[in-house]
Image (tube, rainbow, N blue to C red):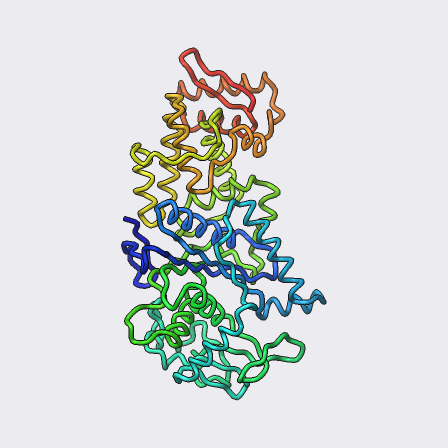
Length: 461
């Protein structure tokens, strides 16, 4: 049985859908005012992996991932550029889609935009006001009263006393309590606005996901995902809004399983647009095959921090090349995995253990090693079938190696022979690390080595 680490409670739990005939998952998507960076790529790839595995496991899934197309940063960027907000967001949605497609990320079933669901947000705010957990401030904003929602802090594990002590508390004299957060923002001069019972304004950031997710997936649904940085305050506020507005005394939570992927770190700091500490997907795609980037992300467990460096991506490049080398000559046509075969059983077991992709990748390498020893067509088909469940190994081996490595790499026959001789000496001296480095370096430069009973032969790929 699939088990998922639930951030609500902090334990692994068996996955038991609310409705086995219709599993529902919502993921917080991008705020579209700039190019997507590697942190965004991780969110997209992680939950693309999750939806692929849920479907492969037989769950009929509805997957929604939203687009935030109005907020302070978008408004500021559009004003700076002197262009309509719709032109700015439309352009960066297109760039986001191009980046996602390059990385093998399948389109969600539903991709709601915040500006298309303002009516639902207004209705939710109205219900919150009716139930006494929202109020209109003197500033003209409408705020959520945190202390009137008894369960506040249950996702993040933060007490009101800890929060009141100052962590991420916005100081606003118009609020009754510093912990309260904005549901509806009064429009400022020159800003876009919508009409509402509280005057012209626009929705706060948190309310949009509550309104869109419940509108599309219902008052209760199975999985809500996003980056670790969203756990507090965004997802905590979503719970408060949604349960405050829509949940009666039925005992069911807004969301059953909360999933959060770890940060991508660059130079020991979280990758973030706000600090300028970013590497965009587009920059990476100029230097690395998109499948290398995807492999780099999936080789780490989704909840672990992911340290970005060129060396780590180079390692991913070499490792993925080894898998593709084992597939040379194997058809690319889709084939179903053999779940009765030992590698298939192991792959399912580790993926059912909270989507343990590092162990799943280890299964792929075990298969590749057996293929290289036995030259088994059946195992090669199994390797490709299992890899494709992760969105990997979907290309012809030669196509990937030529695209990523280059045909020949500019190395002469004499240089190849010298390196093979050095590798022979390293293996004789039991320096297997150096021997592997030579093999991987040659493969990166387009030279595939094949060890046999009569010695080592090579060919250009």
